[in-house]
Structure formats: structure tokens, C-alpha cells
Image (tube, rainbow, N blue to C red; front, top):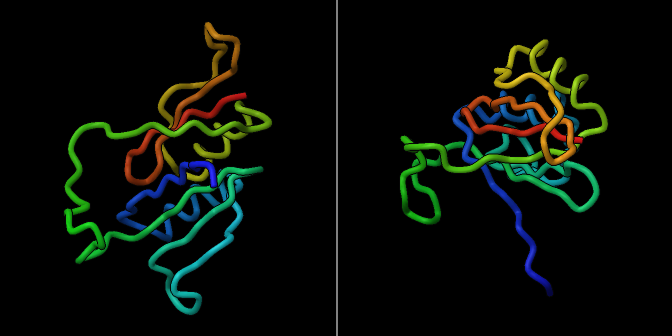
Length: 126
């Protein structure tokens, strides 16, 4: 099996993060644990061959390291979308932080930056 990267984010408010990545950005739930009641972890498909895991902050995470407070800017995510401007507008209308308005990049893509509920930066691109 070839290596495959599967990002997992620790979310201080899992329900709000599910709203951001699911309803607003179009992710489709493919896995939930536990499968009944409030989830502790959810996997969303973000299009063909692309997934993200979202988990609540655990009192005793499996790796043994505290999940908060995080320090510094640890990671940016890049999400390819059909319409950068419309997605950016949807993020703002849903009450999430918009960081950099849509514009054309020097490398030829249209991009914009938004932040998820925990401050992780997401570059919307087409």
C-alpha cells in the first residue's frame, strides 16, 4: 500500500468544526465514532480521494501529549473548490472568519483564505 496522508484536526468545538467543513465547505461524512450519540471523531470526504478527520479535544489523547494550548501556526490546509468567490462568501455568511479576499495569485490560481473555528487557515483555490 502506498503512503496516504490523512490530516486529523483537534477541534475545541467539534459541532462548529463539522458545520464549517461539512455544511459550509461541502464535506460529506463517511465515518463517525461512536456511531450513536455525540461523536468524538468524524471523517469527512472532501472530494475525490481527499479526507479530513475531525476530533474533539480529549482529556487523555492516545499519543499522550496535550492538545491545547497549541502554540504558533502549525499547519495550513488547501481546499480546491469550484468557485472560490462563492465559497468565500458562504464562509463569511455563515459567521466564520474570512482572512484574505479572493484574488488571482502569481502562480495562476484564484485563491482566498479563511479560518476554521480553531484558527486553522484554509486556502480556498481554483
